[in-house]
Structures are given as structure tokens and as C-alpha cells.
Length: 62
Length: 176
Image 1 (tube, rainbow over the protein chains, first blue to last red):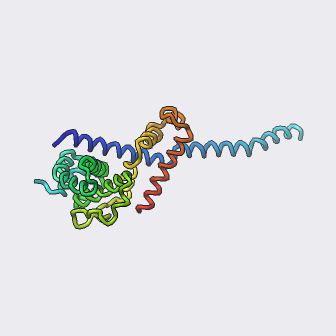
Image 2 (image 1 turned 45 degrees about the vertical axis):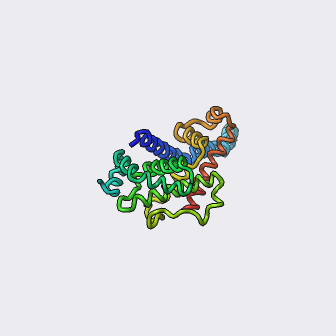
Image 3 (image 1 turned 60 degrees about the vertical axis):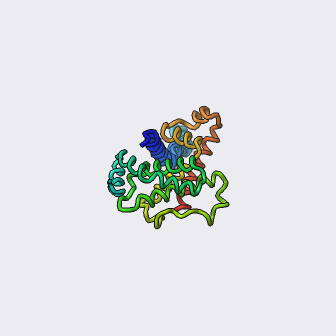
């Protein structure tokens, strides 16, 4: 049996298993989670900041 | 001499000697089968080596109660068709595709058809896509860095990653 042939088979199989893991991670979309967190944080800030600023300005006047 | 089912049971546990025995037993016949498609001994040899690689990658899904040869021939057939498709020789083939030299080599022999199909699709990605996928998903490199290393733009890398995702998804749906 040619060791080289067997080694190539195992090497190619390992590469496929690694690619399979990579594809599974890619399917979930690594940067999508980050995008959602940033978007949510920005949304909260944009919604709450004007009210907070207004409240802070008006409160001493009342 | 051990039966195929015993060797497959060992192979499932990652036994290299079992793989070696199965290669010794089936390689000549599988190469003859691949040659009947490809008419090229070197391409046939490569196709069979690739088939054994895919089987080894999927070893945990093998079923020792099913025919190993049918499983092997099914995978060789798929690899040969993909090879011919890439060579643009496929349009001439329907009608003259040789049947596998076993009774049946259809999905019934494959417990996890979906995973086998995913492996096929991944193996068929070009080298650049494989490297991008590896760098992004496993090495955790940002797309900008991959772009710099490959000489492509950040947008191109993102598009390629998106296309890989889409290709795998589409392929899985088509073959399901």
C-alpha cells in the first residue's frame, strides 16, 4: 500500500472536515450578531438621548 | 480477510488500517468505474482518491449494515459528473452514463444524505473560496485583512462569503 496515497486521503478528508466547520460558522454569519448589537445600541441611544437631554434641561426650570 | 462491514465499523472509529484495507480492496474497481466515465486514468485515480477522502471525512455517518461499494460508487459517480461538468463535457453524456456495477447506489445507502451533499459542495468550491472561508470563519480574520492578503477588495470578500453561503444553501435545497 502506498503510504503517500493513504496520507493524501486522510489529509484531504481533514481539510474537508475543517471546511465543514468553517462553513457552519459562516452560515451563522459572524458579523451579523455584532451588527445587531451595534444597531440596537444606536437605536436605544437615538431614542432615549433626546428625551434625557430635554428632561435634564427642563427639570431645573420647573 | 475481514468483511466490508467489519472494516466499516472500524473505520467509523477512525481506524486508519481499516481505511487502508478498504482502499486496497476497492480502489482498482472504483478506478475502472471512474475511467469508464472519464476516459482519463489520471483523472480517474484522482476522483477515486477524492471519493475515499469524502468517505473518511464522513466516516461517523457510515452504516456498516449497508453496502460499502454502493456508497463508494455513488460518490465516485458524483465526483466524475462534477469533473465532466467543469470540463464542459457533461452535455454530451446523458444516455451514456455507465451504471454503477452494483445493484443500486441510491440515497437509501446513505444515512445522512444532507451531510454528504454538504461535503460534496464544499469540496467543489474553488481554492480561493476555500481559503477565504477558512480565514474568515476559523482564523477569525476580518474581511479587510483577508482582502489585503488576497489582493481583493473588502467588498469582493464579503460578496464571496455571501455567495458561498448562498451556494451551500441552494445546493442543499436542490438536492434535498
